[in-house]
Structures are given as C-alpha cells and as structure tokens.
Length: 88
Image (cartoon, rainbow, N blue to C red; front, side, top):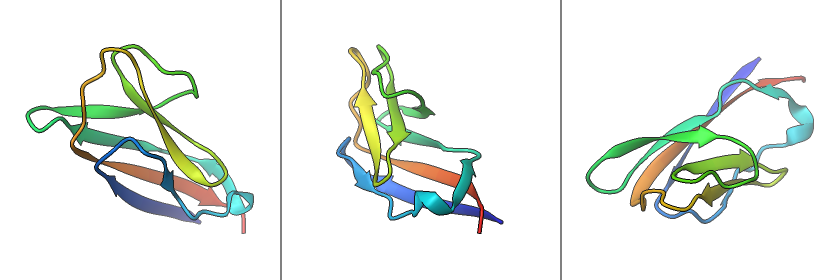
C-alpha cells in the first residue's frame, strides 16, 4: 500500500514526521520545494552531508532533518512530501 504525507515548514528546524519506520518498506518519492519570498527552488532529498548552494533533507527515525549548504538561498516557507510503501 502506498502512502503520502505533506509537511509545511517556515524554518530549517527539524520536523517530527510521526511515521513508524518499522512499517515502511521503502520511501519511493521524497521531494519538496521552498521559496525565499521571491523565487521558488527544488528541495533535494539527499545525504546527511550539506551540499554547497543547496537546501537538502534526509529522514531519521523521528524527524525530517534539513541541511543548508554554504551559499544556499534563505527560505521563508516550503513543503516536503514523503511517499512510501507500507510493509504491513
């Protein structure tokens, strides 16, 4: 079974996702976008290492964690979408 959850944010503080990772087979399409108030940018699902010029995120057992690389645009708001397959 496929599930999708949408999370809105206004800072790069971690977001508790409330998902039981033991019930997930795989995340199939984590993605997002954000704005600096003028332009819109893609939000990359990447590693737990910051990438210069990018705002990225990764998933821990409890949170969606954002990383802001040197030179990345400041953000004012955005959205992360997590899609996954359940193994139950």
